[in-house]
Length: 384
Image (cartoon, rainbow, N blue to C red; front, side, top):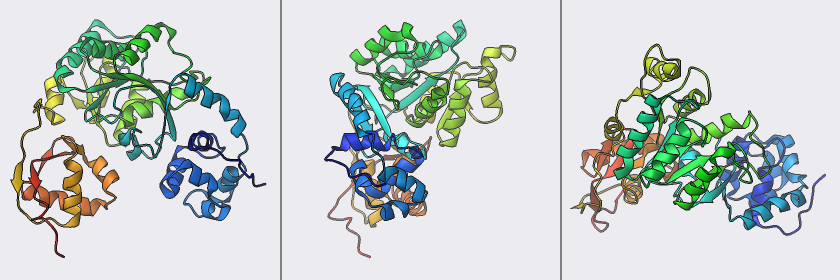
């Protein structure tokens, strides 16, 4: 049975596509890329939906027959009442780094002001029952990162997570907690005041779960993929060989993120996971913040952007496009260039090599690129 929808707005359709049975994050992302908006997905014909890779008759029918819009009105009222910012896959404010992950959440709910696309985002994770050693490492790491204007991400759990958030507040860095439940509650409840301070001080709370979603066990691995996917790098401070931090580190590796870990005593079970990540080459060993800063290419941190050298050279369209993208930020990760340019990986690789050889860009550690020179547009028009 095909349902004829009454007039609805884009948010209603966004909530709906996140609720349709058999349509998970991977399918929703494919549909959003194909049709451009949630409204367009629901306005598409059955035949159009079936032609989308991975959708087929069953999922197309599930979309076309969805009739639970009235059940979503309560969520819309909640969003409006508490000034929640819904971020759909196509929203420019959606964490763009997450879009490089095949299972990026369809819809995020955000309460806060921190820029989720900040130029430097770091996730700090670890055990819920930290030692004094772990506390020292976390607090000192964040303190040394303070001059670099890094957005600190964690899961607002007991232990290392909370220490990272608190250290960020102390050092006047924005910090965002990623939750495994809806924004109508806070788990653990002991962190309600911490959460309020995070929002009030320019950070925020982020989740993919609707209100009234409880912090059930199976929600935490889903939460961990957001922690891993929206950051430039992940720092493991202390963890055992099992648990959420190890899951997050594994996810980060699968997303080609930079993973770092502080080593601990070989006899300490709370450092066994971090030591194993280092031993198995799944994390780079660090002992101080400066090592992270150097590897990530954050060592040079001018308060004002340096005056760029003017070059008068000829660029082809791909090179010019990448140079334009690099001019918008201090540095850009290769994944973001792939995502935003729409060019093939081989075209990007060739263009970046040519730009580097001509002195236009710098190849930084951590798969990042920085524009060194601005190009005179009049002199760089490409003649095929």
